[in-house]
Image (cartoon, rainbow, N blue to C red; front, top):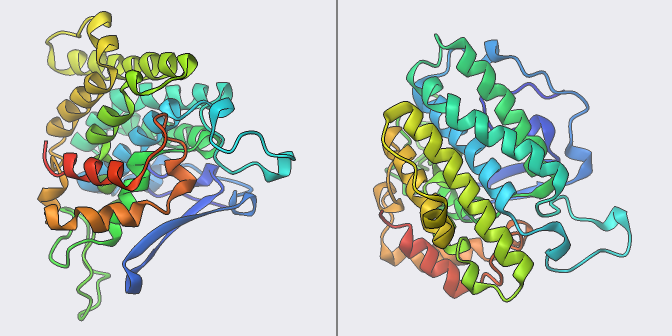
Amino acid sequence: IAIPTTAGTGSECTGVCIFDDTPTRSKTGIASRALRPALGVVDPENMKTICSSVAKYPGLDVLCHALESYTAIPHQLRPGGRPSSPILRPAYQGSNPVSDIWSMHALQECVQYLPRLVADPEGDEEARSRMCLASSSAGTGFGNAGVHLCHGMSYSVASQVKNNFWTDGYSQDIREEDDVHGLVAHGLSVSINAPAVFRFTGKPQESDDNLLRQHIIERHALCARILAEARVERQGGGVPSDSAMKSEPGEALAAELLELMSELDVPLGIRKLGYTEDDVDSLARGTLPQERVTLLSPRQPVELKDLQKLFSNAMEY
């Protein structure tokens, strides 16, 4: 029985768990059908006392779950092809018609209610309830489709954390006196890479496959439009034209993410977490083994040099 206390990882709906091995400064995931809970009890009352920061970063994790699973490589194009038996299918399939429904619902809820929840986590009961549902919806979506590079890169960002960094708003009460290991909240470690990632994945000209090119254009542009329309509803302004978004879909999505990150006061780049250019190679090498997620990027292959460039581009926005 899984009872979430943030909105959130959606782990009540997935067969995946994550662990942080502090002695080796590594973080990774375990995927197994045996990990999927028999029952999830999702009650917004269990999240009533969270602070704004603990509303913000798990909420950004929900957003990235939705974006990554919806833009993941189509299931029929997943590297490795169809397994010889259904029992040999990986936990993460690539984007597919069933997961798309859940991921899109989560995205639409998240862009509407996450800013409200961050502004008033205790008092805005509607926002808390809707983000609970968005979290579980995203968990159902990415629990089958998978996530890709935002999460793949996040493991290095979180596990190689600088000793003097601790995410604002997160309690240090559980920290032992001699523990110098810092903390990059998971949702921060994921979302801080997202603009660089979608600029990389949202380049249809890099694909030789017409189906994949259309997939990249349509999905990155649609996600950008959903974010833009929610931004306009909150702040005014305008939505870029369809032709502008589809001509540079990755850039359009990255721009809208940066608008939201600025609105929510999220650090804009991993330099804000203490990383420098000297860390790029180590961060990239820590990401390279994460094929469980990197193989789901709609842009393939993702090699060491690509990851090095991605971390360089994520240094600051």
